[in-house]
Image (tube, rainbow, N blue to C red; front, side, top):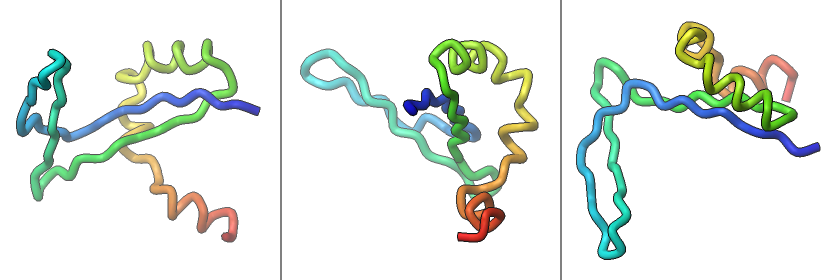
Length: 79
């Protein structure tokens, strides 16, 4: 089974934008002591489910910001 993923970057502050020789850009992010930067990830079975979630992600902000860490999920299943 192949999963599709939806990612959300929270509390990120743009520290620097670097323009490469080929014209592409890299964005370097950072965080602050008060609000640490983090990425939320949700897996989906189909691309359609992932696209639908991407359109609704801001309506589910609490779901993502209050989510458990990977270590907490693993501890729940007993590994």
